[in-house]
Image (cartoon, each protein chain N blue to C red):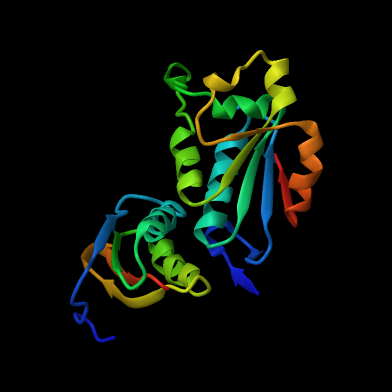
Length: 83
Length: 132
């Protein structure tokens, strides 16, 4: 999906300042409460979690829509909850 | 299927169900309790199944309202809450509670007290074991 094409975010979680694995834990906690098809926006700045979160979504039915780098090492990851 | 779980090191088989058994007290034991919580919550967040078994002095982990600030440490109740929110289970060994004079109402809500006879069944439900 092209950058900036996320049209709707249903839930957002801010993990800035957290270290691995807490950003992944907060991401999964949110996803467990969401309905299939809803989009989660994850904000963070921990470099390892930027790689680890998409990796963790591979086998659990979630779809990583976009990983977007921001200034000063921050990032945003958009995940669509699987069915 | 294996997935490289770099965040906690090594390669981790996501199909295996993991049981982490904690027998140390919550504080002052080289962070075994905190380490147990870190690992089990990472396993759950990766999408696998995991269970925490508290036995011997490990049962102190499940006491309500712990406030270890005076010894310069934080309690692990947030991590225990995360574990439950991630779909994990917490078992506490009943005889370990009795030996320490701890009653069920003193413990957090989201745990299950089991007896020694239940241990075999719990062990049979898991393929990977970590003892701390």
